Image (cartoon, rainbow, N blue to C red):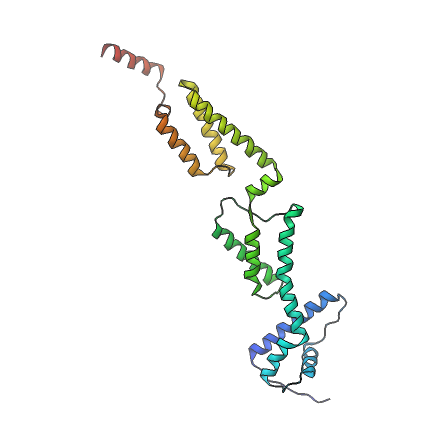
Length: 240
């Protein structure tokens, strides 16, 4: 048997090596009992089927027009489609990609890109799929508060109850006076702190409510005077 040596650039050899590994991966997906050939046998089979002169351009042509190239294109197309279908159908069966209610759109984009990069690299996939997968993850991500509402989780039921208590506390405060009004203000403050902690109320909303109350009922935010101080004020008003 005669031996032929072929010299190609490093990037061409690396491309062939990646394609060989992908060929093995695709073949094992189709047949778990598949016995992988050697790299030399893989390359020889491709070159034997090639009808062009064995130039560097011919090797490139082999990798974009042969049977393996067709299989690779099919797999590249299927991978993002399979993931898209998986994500799309997940919510039908109660599965969701949840994100923090505090995340901005940019936060979700950054996290989606990082997650997609990790998936594609671990699967030894084409890095061109990263952006496609990241876009699918981002478009499917839902705020955890929205998911809790859909699934009526204990956290959601508690949030509904807390919102009702907040509503009742504000009404009670509007109709109360004296010590009762101050007690209602304390209850409202406590409920709002819990609301911020559980994500059902934003800090800006809490501040707006308090600013509105200060404007409408400034006397509630004055320090309550003791009995002696009130007596002294009364005495000065009578004899001052």
